Length: 337
Image (cartoon, rainbow, N blue to C red; front, side):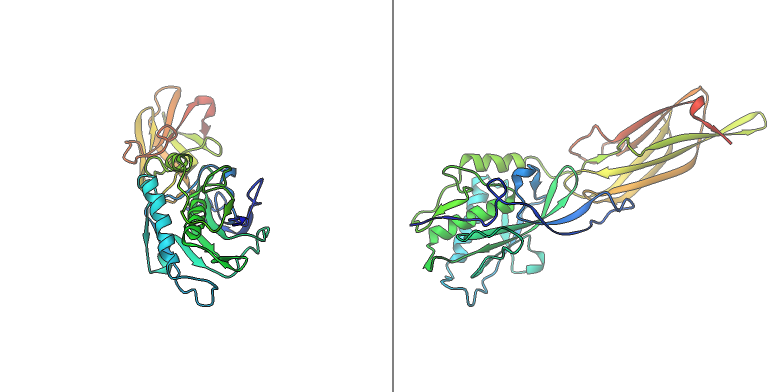
């Protein structure tokens, strides 16, 4: 029996973040607002909003373990038991389905002779590692995929079925967004091998995941005040004045999922002067909107301008109170032409 480390990474008990690549996430217009980050060894304690945005998760279990010492075909069932433990333990808040198609896998689980720790601090007794790729949307870090590697032996001694279940439980916990935890817990970074009975999930782990994944995955449309410009032009035509409205702003999706068919409406003193439908704003994406020369009836010296995204609340969002921006335009703000 030996107390050894399950995971090979640690930052204040778990390891530093190592960024693998930085490339643009798909964005409409605003290409510098959001990036897609491949992160190996992210410590979820550094940002509690690390989570998936869909369930069930497709899991590919790689059984091609030729050449892996002390590999047993029964290890696949041990991994499946670990997946079932997380699913039933959380009351299906998290769920999985196995797939034979590697291309549509969310999580890949495989057995290796040696862990790939090239981007992380090596710990000699590591038994497993979980890598996650994260899309940073400013408010949430959405897990895009996870690669779990598992060893089959420690110091030349084969791991038991209970050992494999414990290691898989631990690494799947990381793949779901959990960090290390001290005490008698499956997320403790140290495990005693040679076990006969697998460990149980703690109430703390279950409650953390339930809180992390509570509610359905939703978008969150917002119009930030920063960068918004609203102005009016006045053109004198004989004894009449013609007023036109100009709007320059960005619409962001700070939520967890993409959103489609987004209505946007511009109103002046409560009267609709422009409507449009946006095809898509991906999670973490932004749309630059510039509309000039919208005719506006102007009777009073002050005009109340409203720009509203999803004005009739057809889209269920995380926050329904950030979809609108208002500007009061006085005569002094108008530009004569």
